[in-house]
Image 1 (cartoon, rainbow, N blue to C red):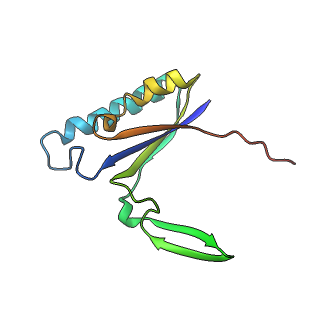
Image 2 (spheres, one colour; image 1 turned 120 degrees about the horizontal axis):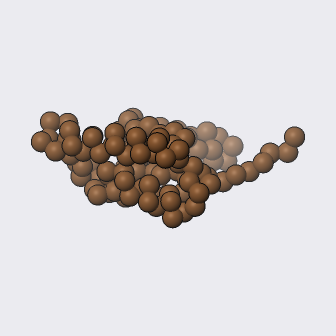
Length: 119
């Protein structure tokens, strides 16, 4: 089953470039990515640009509206994701615990809905 691991943290909660701990923090990301790849669960993943670069799109009364920034009002921001193909939720939780920002924010696991479209 595929799980999307959504990585949330408040701005400044994790080590930033220039901080003494930043290299170690990034090594944690390299290590967890390598573990995901070697265990065969890695299907994708990327860091995201800051929420200030986001554009939200919605349709209301048949008209498109766009807004700068994310739609949700929250202290934590979505900073990146991994798409993991795990045998079950227990394995997905085990893998999510390896993500360094689990120490500074939250990693939300969401099962990917498997919908078959009619031909």
